Length: 141
Image (tube, rainbow, N blue to C red; front, top):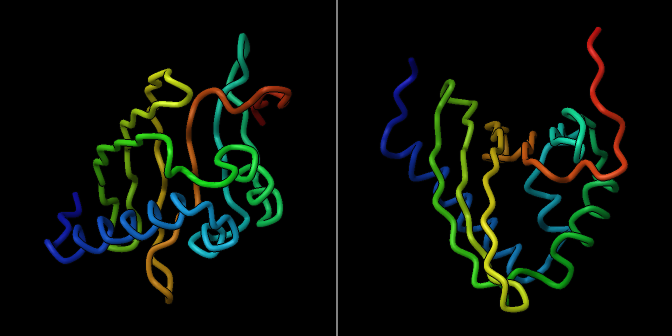
């Protein structure tokens, strides 16, 4: 099992600090700059099974505009992230988050795969339940 160095852990934490600042401002194009495309997305279909897609940069931008619009600044967002390094270049990050939107507190649980690129860390896979409204369910084979 790969054991990350303190510097590697700090680099992933710093990446999320930068990501959160960009998300807070609602700078969707800049968020896309922090990703590798095509991006894998895994979710589930309400009342169904899992659903998977690969998003282009344009599809990601459209989805994020719908999800966070002008930014996350007013959402009272708090996240606890647990990075699990697969290797020095691959890290799965599990996030437990809460946010308040229009007086309602909501909890979220999701996972991101970050990959180390020549330009630094980037996210490549997003896994979160509940995004698959209208998506076809995953098929084997």
